[in-house]
Amino acid sequence: MPVDDDDRTLLPSGAHSAKGAPPSEHNRKNPPVVAPNARQQTVDADGVSLPAGYRLHEFEVQSKLGQGGFCIVYKAFDHQLKRVVALKEYMPNGMARRVGNSEVLPQSPRSQEVFDIGLNSFVKEGVTLAKFDHPALVRVYRTFQANGTAYMIMQLVQGKTLEEVARAMPAPPDEAWLLRLLDPLTAALQVVHDERIVHRDIAPDNVMILDGTNQPLLLDFGAARQVIGDSEQAPTAMLKPSYAPIEQYPDSGQPQGAWTDVYALAGVVHRLITGKAPPNSQGRVLKDAYVPLTGRVTGKYSARFLKAVDHALKLSPAERTQSIPAFRQELGLDDPARGVVGPAGGGVAPSKRVPIAVWAIAAAGVMGVVGLVVYKLAAAPESPSKPGILVAEPAKTPAAAPSRVLNVVVPASQAPLAPVVSDPPVPSALDPSIEFDRVVQQQSPAIQTTLTVAKPSIRVNRDPLRMQLTANRAGYFYVLIHDTDRQVRMLFPNFADTENRIAAGQSVELPHRTTDAETGLSKSVDLRFSDPAGPARLLAIVSSQPLDFTAVTKSQDGEYRVLLQGPEAGLAQAAAPERPLYLGRVQCEPAGSRCSSEYGAASAAITVTP
Image 1 (cartoon, rainbow, N blue to C red):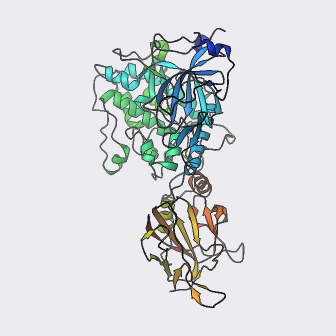
Image 2: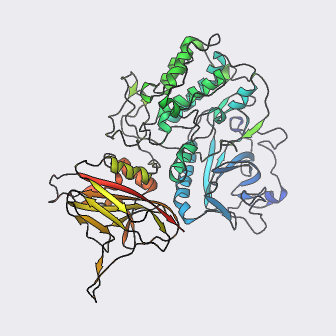
Image 3: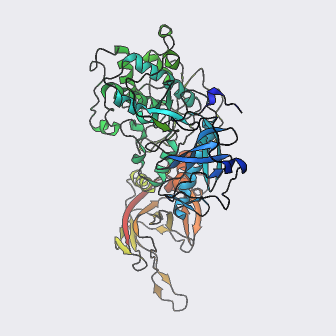
């Protein structure tokens, strides 16, 4: 079957062409399989990758192109359409392992939740990207699940990263060259933003210049990698600091949207002009070391062009260029007098040849779970009203709370008149320690609460946990723990010990002492930790009214409630951001009446040792 030239696969010299023969006579005679048969080698010598010759449906693995933190990318032959493709496998490093017949499993039961979050994002992202048809966006042909994981079949292309091209240049590119680069990239980003997707990982190593056409291609999306980072790793490790605006950092409290990608793309231009990336945005908060390009760079660039880049690199999202159409207008890309640019006008011509590398959407150095997040149209950062920009009503979120609903500003001509109906976003994971801090920070000064632990260091299965709670006002007390197994539990009250009243000035010893039914004597109740060892955090709340934690209860572990955490907690918090999630809901008595929501809170840390 002939292959459409517009859908062809680009390969390095000497490799099979898209119309080339399959790699073996054996595979021509055998039908495609989903699971390996008895004669099929299932794991490569590295113990992680699929070996050459492995079959998944109609796709036969030829070689491994690269492996990163979250995926493995292979070159594969499509026996049905007779073409070479990139086969991308979801395989988060350190979180998953390959066993038996090539099945991919989480490393441990604790990894299951985070593994599933990334898997879900990987599949949804593939389905959505398959809808895009733009020359500056990589093509996704299909996705499927097998071996306990997911796969994405993609266009295989040949070229160099923009970073490689820039390093090979004897001098910085001129304005015309940069405009030829930016024209297709901004057009592609607008297609993405129209679908309520923010890229969030634009950098020189995530832009590829294709051999032959010099067409720029936007690579690896970073949102799902961020989702996993929120759940399992340090979120800052998921960022490229030089190109990430301030709103991408944890707890910035700033909404993300089209302006986030504008900043990163302008950072790429800054690197091409000056040879260096812009200063880290987090460092700019303390002391802004950014030196505007306007007045700093002369000769090759117009004042208008430099001013547009400076505007897009403003630290504050509210002061920054708000959308891709606005950025294009400031750059002069849409001026009628400019004529045709981009590939039709010669594309981006590198000044000197650099080594060829084969790339799929994610290569070894920049590979990630190419995720997407679909965002609701919500409030943009505060800025003067601009023609052509649709801004919804601001979300009522306290300034101290991290924003969990990220925003996209859309041109009014393209904005829907009705709410966008789409798959719900993968929620950001909620950090229990941060939420415990929020509860303490937002307490009423009228209710003074202290929590003291008898021993801040406790040995597993040996030392009991004992604590003392005091309050200057009468009320109801609740004690939560972020346990060593990273679960959030309610220690008191519990299903065996429901007494949680405290009098003004009273000191309550926890756990409560009980009375032996046979002897009538008072005895203590021990609360001991089992494995694993590690740090734990306690939160005590004394409320003037009873609190209801039903909505944030996930399950029951013996006599204790297990509360929502991770992405489930993030979704619940986003639905009601005005009150910390782990504060529960006030129960007024009688029901429906108005009552005080005052509370006091205290926190304590303990260390559990082997």
